[in-house]
Image (cartoon, rainbow, N blue to C red; front, top):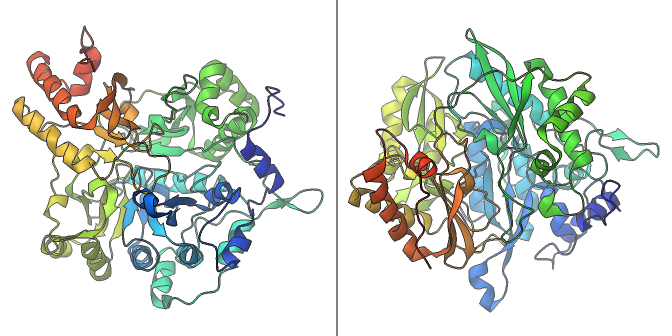
Length: 583
């Protein structure tokens, strides 16, 4: 029973308590040559190892074809070129030939078969990354501004992001015994692996500290304990005025405070999270509260204390109600400040002023602090692939091999190539153009701000399409803008196949949330700064009618807006909420 509520614990809590090393029966399944999938409880345990089991839902009529998705850990989205080349090779050997940039600055491998999971994860670790805790009831990948340093501030923020990453890694021993020490395989990647290791100074930044031991000598995690967190936990950093990591949507956020050109610390944000469940009023999207100010030296202590509050007070009886946002909402911000102050020994001082003026990625060439250049590239729905004459995957592999830039994944599923010498700029542009990738330089102000989750056919939670239909949907919205006389205006549009909100539709100017096959809830009124939630405008709208409905809104917006007023601001500030047409 849960000691706080007296209610029965959720099944996952019992699983974690029974196997606190998170091993489950994973070893036995991997050793079984007849096994094509994980079964039973192991579908929950593998999440802590960075794995989601899936099947191709397009083929269910003829029988399930199982595979898994594997997610890497890349703090701040930073991927050295040599590491990227290992990923590129692995995606062709063990996945479906593509790499998927996520909305949390990681890579996902899709379509991985059972026999390829061990070699894939072993190779990722050999290349000095990891998949540990990229899923599961733990702190996941830490996001940070993806633009390369144009001043010392960004360098220091990256340092703090890596510090909190390491501090919040779970200390389970099962991960390394199963996937690192337990896999012996020669893939012929020796030279590529060696270069990847050299690129991060021979030390894996995602190796957790050694586990403690309890009275019996068993491994023990001093932060997470035996049952970890009630649910997932997301942490991010942002540097005003650009909210490129959607910082208010995180369970915990650190907003950089700069005075007289110096990073003096961070404002702490707690309690964001967007996932909901259709028809469940106890679940809802929520933006984080600003809690107080901390110095750089306090980041690890404060971050650990916030995680511990979630550990101790989060709902362990209902996983749909288990995020820290519900603790903040239901117990109150002042309760949280007092609880945090009690754990730290003193309350935090008041937060300092800050302002976000926008959000999203910049495309094209920009100069770095060190005199080198970085190139912002649009990646449609975050999918790095070759398709017909568009061969982005081949182009990026060529660039990585010839020029060795640092790859930086953005929280809007795009890509930055950094640390480029001025003499190489023209040659890099030529590689991209020669591979049919002209769109990556100038996608337009709808495509460049848009996001969609993978959804069908692989995600088991998807109720409707997302990634596969999103490009055509955006094209129709562009037509609607042109018809209203507002062509090429910036617009933040996001789509997800279910209400979990992985592409963050709930704070977009236009958010589409899958409700059923071919039907979406239309959310309107978020803003370009990522600091306001959208509201439900029309429920279960048919996919084909959505561009028409929004096109009519564009016409009304064009007539009624004030000078420079963004679409989301017009919707939110309208004296009368724009009427949604009847079904």
